[in-house]
Image (cartoon, helix red, strand yellow):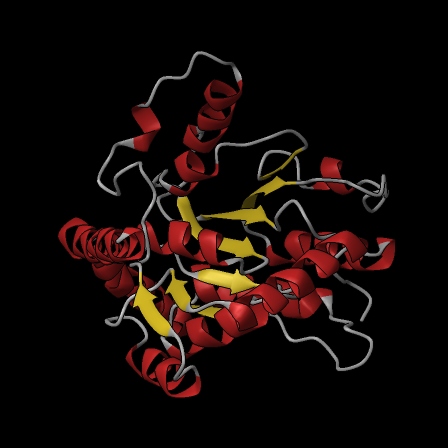
Length: 279
């Protein structure tokens, strides 16, 4: 494929997979309410291991916080929230962030950018240009006003919590999925590796997101598919099912009592087994 995990990340993933096989206890950041069949299958496959759901461990900023009014000592959040507040309708902006450990070829990067442009939607793109590739000629001038390319660190939770955000174009890492659904934001997923493809399929199954299609072997995609899916999920009537699905999952991801119970049960398990091991 033309977009892959870096070699050191792939090696790290292989090491973790090897360690997983040797583990006696599997602690999974998810819950039975979200994945009942998957947990049952995991227990059947891992009969020699104890499988413990940890809960989704939602982010520390509560989903009902008024993120738009949170103050920050630095200037970055002030600049970001000012842009988000400038005439942006509720649920009209795409937040774009593909994680810090993946990179595209220059060809794919330009096709991706042109897809954002073609969508006609407002977007905030956290762009980590690890390869120093050039964006399409004139791209930032053409999207000026409705799109911003942000090249430094951005407070993802605060951005997702802003009322103008209507969709998240993500690589589909589990932490990003959890953060997005904690605010009821549907996702358009562009996976690169690890668990991201599985997460994308799960989101599609729960009507909370869609995956950008890519050809087998080359991993190629089209700007039109990027634009069409963004418009589907954020503004088109046909995509309301995804917006509603994400809002429904927000009830689960934002259930503090449920998630605290999972943490409490995990702590009790650890205390009991640490005590037994010490004796």
